[in-house]
Amino acid sequence: MYRTPIQKRVLTVEDVSCFGKCSTTVALPILSAMGHETVILPTAVLSTHTGGFTGYTVRDLTDDIQPISEHWKKTGIGFDCIYTGYLCKGRQVSLVSDLIDRVSDENTLLVVDPAMADNGKFYWGFDADHAADMMRLCKKSAVATPNVTEACFMLGEAFPENGYDRAYVDALILRLVSAGCRSVVLTSVNCDGKYGIVGYDADKKAIFSYFHEKIDAPIHGTGDVFTSVMVGHILSGKPLETAARLAADYVRETVRVTYPYLSEHPYGLLFEKTLGRLIPGDGE
Image 1 (tube, rainbow, N blue to C red):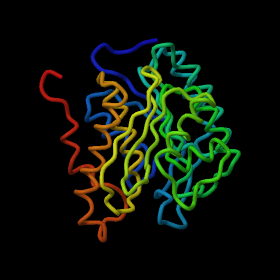
Image 2 (cartoon, one colour):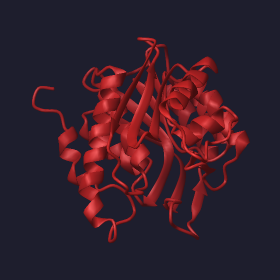
Image 3 (cartoon, rainbow, N blue to C red):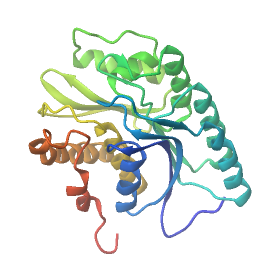
Image 4 (tube, helix red, strand yellow):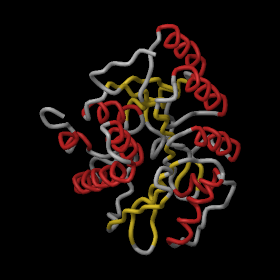
């Protein structure tokens, strides 16, 4: 498969929300700023993201996934990384799984963000069947990045509505690994008065964590920003734990920058204000 020696090439497979900072409109500028050639495969086009809006339009692009991937296969286009995010339905998950088989090889890094739920609830249109579909996709990945709610639902478990402690989180990750996931970075972990990530590195066979004081600011798209930055650092040669810590630092700093403007800009992180921090220095 054709790759360029100049840059790492990453394919992002997720929706395009025309307004609102999430999914492709976050991944594309972030990964490009970090120096990677970024290819997109939109799974749907939405007038706005789904958080806080009603009456939004959705153009389903499910039928385009297979023809696009077949053309890439015939052309010999290959990818150093495939990064999947918001997928609309079970058939899309199946088609994306086929796409991965078609345009990847043993050297392709697969990262799956099973974006479908948060705060103990599914996003609109998703259910337990979709969670099972996403679990199957996560089992194919090198790294999966669910939040706590998504991890519970993929395991067929109820979200702990009354809160949880660190022991619960560690056990949750190990259940994902036992179920077939390789490396896992659990996001939006909120326990013991702190907020952060807990992960499992399959190469080291060890759990790691990174916590900080929580900034109480419900901002859409933080998970998309986190995973995009983490993928960018992994492609630049950083080990998983380092990449995850750097991504968490970037999200925290960008939340801090965004926080004073939330009342007038409640539609996502002001990542444009901090994007320059991700651009590699000369010679990198």
